[in-house]
Length: 105
Image 1 (cartoon, rainbow, N blue to C red):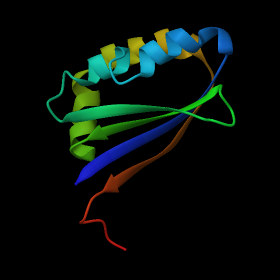
Image 2: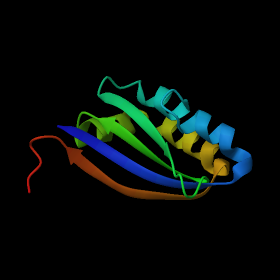
Image 3: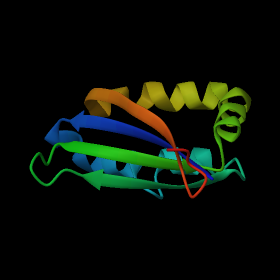
Image 4: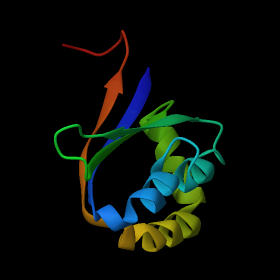
């Protein structure tokens, strides 16, 4: 069963290129996450109606895998988070979800 972490970002149009570089599937965050074999990938979505709004979906093998990653890579995670702060106007964690056939009703 996959574990998904979903974030929404509002950006300044002047930071679009840097934001997409940092948050895209081959970007800075994905590069950091790939330090864990439990990381499965990232999707970057751009809102059609609000072009300065994005969502990311990060895929992990489970909640425990992401928690272990954050513990092991806490300093690098915090440093990248500080570095990326200037790229966004707003950042909202929309939730963390399990996806797959075993999800209970």
